[in-house]
Amino acid sequence: MDEQISSNSQTEMSEENFLRWEAHEYFHMEKTADWYWAVGIISVSIASVAIILNNVIFGILVILGAFTLSVFASKRPDLAQIELNEKGIILHKYYYLYSSLESFWVEENDNHPKILIKSQKTFLPLIIIPLGEANSQEVRNFLLNHLKEKEYMEPLLTKFMEYLGF
Image (cartoon, rainbow, N blue to C red; front, side):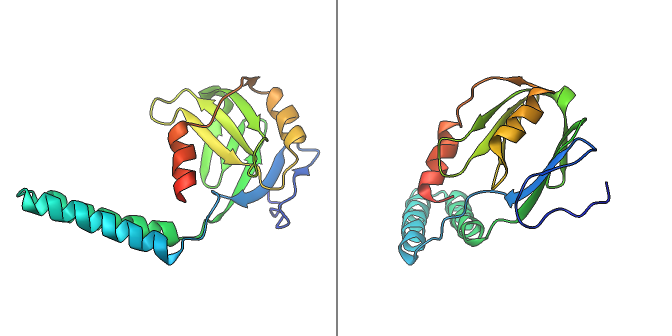
């Protein structure tokens, strides 16, 4: 498997029976200056109230959290290398064995198609993998050989965070 990963974001299928593509880790929305001002005003207001109520540590924590949030929000997503093979799924630098996964759903009904995979892990119950320019039907057919298909919805908190620009 020393093949180079395609840089044109197209799905590859080979005689070795795997699919490989590239996609951004997450959908990035450019933030306006107003967004940063809103985060700053809200965080300074909360920190001020915390300090007035003699909770200085919480006030400092809010300011540090807002700074970290702003830095993360301005970061552009990396290009993730995704591979589906006979043993599992490779997402960037993480490897998920099919034996640790329960089922999947290919969500195509929005502007950013993705695969939702139900994991057996407690702290990572739903893995969301972007499809990018990959052929969703080809990916679905490949995954049907290894996992059950079951309809899932993206968590409401994830959709809310996308709406806010994360």
